[in-house]
Structures are given as C-alpha cells and as structure tokens.
Image (cartoon, rainbow, N blue to C red; front, side, top):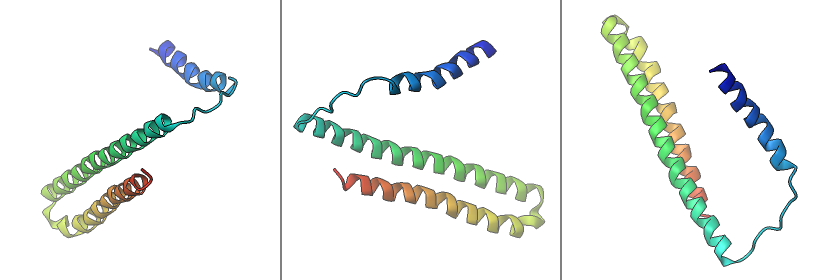
Length: 110
C-alpha cells in the first residue's frame, strides 16, 4: 500500500512540471470555442451550487445531530448547547448563500 501511495504522490508532483515544460500552442478562436466556454461555465456554476448545497446539508445535519445527542445526554445543558448550534448553522448556511451569489455572478457572464 505504501508503494502505491509513493507512486501516486510522485506522479502528482512530477506531471505538472512536465506539462509546464511543453511549448505553448496558440489559442483557438471562433464562435465554437466561445460556445464551449459558455457551456463549461454553466456546468461549473451548476456543480458549484450543487456541491455547496450538499456539503451544507451534511454539515447542518451533523451539527444538529451532535447538539441533540448532547442535549439528550444532559438535558440541563440545552441552553448552553442550543445557542452555539444556531450560530454554527447560520454560518454553514451563509457559506451556501455565498456559493449561490458566486454562481449568479458567473451566470451573469454567460
């Protein structure tokens, strides 16, 4: 297993150096390239907001589960656990909203 990790690590470290040493080719121009870039940007915004929503939902679920488990073990600590949990949920949700705003900004470039 260690040999595989070493081989993959070396490949990850060496491949960018080889690619950077290649000669630069002129960039293609035309309407087809522009359409391809627009499609890539639309795909990137869709994947970005999807991953942000998925990660935010996982984070909120884990935060709520941990808080409820702590309250179940010690009901007297509900007040001390609930406030930090709500703040954490708001911060997690703000990251998802930032991703939505960035996606809208990128879609505005299409």
